[in-house]
Image (cartoon, rainbow, N blue to C red; front, top):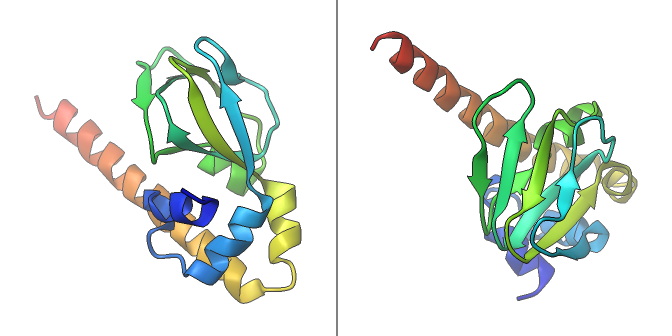
Length: 146
């Protein structure tokens, strides 16, 4: 599967036009990691979005929150891609993991001549993050009511 087709399978890119995904694909780097290898750890300033093409990743947030498993078609690093802040958790490959790594600087350079494309892409990322936030708030409210 080519990179654009892989990106189309990712939830945060579902509403992004193919022409914009082609721009994202041009800056995406393919990376493969073995079991136990670290993708990122606290304080890393990768400023990148990690798209899981295949495999399973264990993410552990700082502060003692429970680990979360991510798999094919899911993403990590959306927040640091947007805000540029250092990463605040650890992500480790549980098995062979194939990633697309989209670095913020490379993406910004690619989108510089097409502000309309940047708006479409970052709006899609913002909608995805807003949806996650809504679900998290709902789960917190549910847990408080028990």
